Image (cartoon, rainbow, N blue to C red):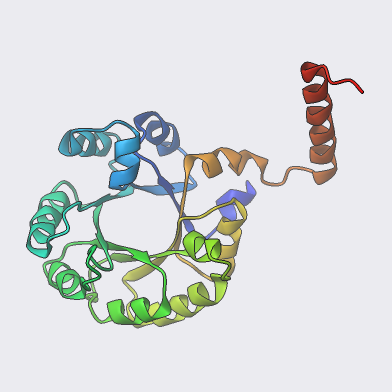
Length: 238
């Protein structure tokens, strides 16, 4: 068995590129997909509903998360209901606050009480985790996405926050922690080591999965050859 297939953490591809989604759909170690408005805009998507329904036509046995894009709470709720109705495998991404910093816990509680699966995003602190736990409904699947990569970007080790969240979420067996905004392949193994239920990876990290188990001595030689060839192509001289 390939080392990646032994990982207990579910790997979710974060993408809005149709080609990348189709390519990853058949991989047994890819358990689902996530998207967001930034990725969709970068992929040139202008029709949200069309993209979502075309994606769902190809992804019928794995989860996929689509995000609301309003900043007004009433409109967020309307959008969440529309998105949720697209399929049983759909999670609705709701940020922890709106752009004004207003908590969306009441909205999240209302949605989960209506049996809408949610994926709470942009969480960076343990306080936010503690705040959100009471808003989740037992019996309704949900994702709690902590942006571990963004935490690391500030020079803070995300592992303690992630580990504590794993323990906190045991209060609700239907809530799963996502290690979000991952930065490198190693993050998959870090997430797995603490019992984190899921991790999102970019396509650039996805492409590196084939390197798992690569002999480091051989990798060193390949690196030397790369530098040598680059020097030749540049026609450097002293």
